[in-house]
Amino acid sequence: MAEITRIEKRKLEKCLEMGEGYVLDFVNRTFEDFFLDSFNIEISNEKYNSGNSGSKANRLREFWKKESNYLVGKSIVELLDYSKEIGSSYNKSEDTLNECYQIGYRLRDEMGIAEIDAIKPIEDTRDYKLLAELVKDHISKNQPEAGLDRLHTYLVGYVRNLCEKHQIHYEKKESLNAIFGKYVKAITKTNIIESQMTIRILKFSISILDSFNHVRNNQSFAHDNESIVNYSESILIINNINSLIKFIQEIERKIDDNSTLDEPENLPF
Image: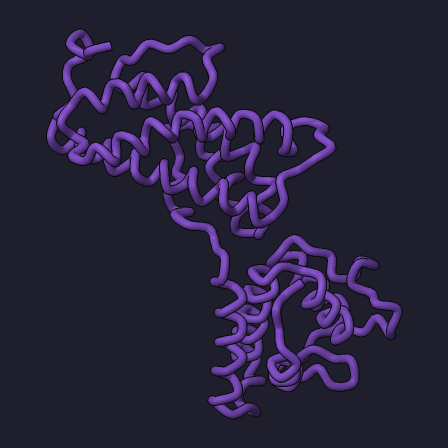
């Protein structure tokens, strides 16, 4: 349930012209299209029918009640943007419009996904490009639970690619954390990492990835699992994995710039 106060709700309803069951200039079809195209949500679903009139305004109120802060905040911002596009905002004071934007920003940014731009195509191949797009698509649509499986698959490919780049031997059957452990062992024997704390964090990340294996196999949509990691924990997991990927990308940039990593035959395994 989104955390909107009564005063904020009144401001939003006024700004989005929700009197008499309407929302801005939407008709039923365009209202449904807006939520389907922007958020992959069927606003006409019974989930958003409280037993009242089923009007657009009432469905939007139910949407505010039942969805996350992030999703509600994002929809508020996009609805306000739309109101400006159609010229509806000219009928409102600038202060009122700004206050409503701030409500949307507060909800949207309260618990977002960090370092989403770290998810990039691993190689110049269609499969890896599609995989990266799928991960980012789930995140951008505020479906972190659905993105966990794809993110794990992406990370396996990314770490394998790093090992191949530096000719670090691994077996296909080896787990994600085992392969990452070999990569960490290689780079920590160089001077590319300056802090012992950073090295400890990287080594600790090996056990985190072991737990990620468990989540992927037992608590994601990868299989027909009864228990799926909830929304907030999915965000925590994704944020940590994205931050790790982002840091590894920085390490690799330094390696490429400085040629610090030893030649393969001299790597101290």
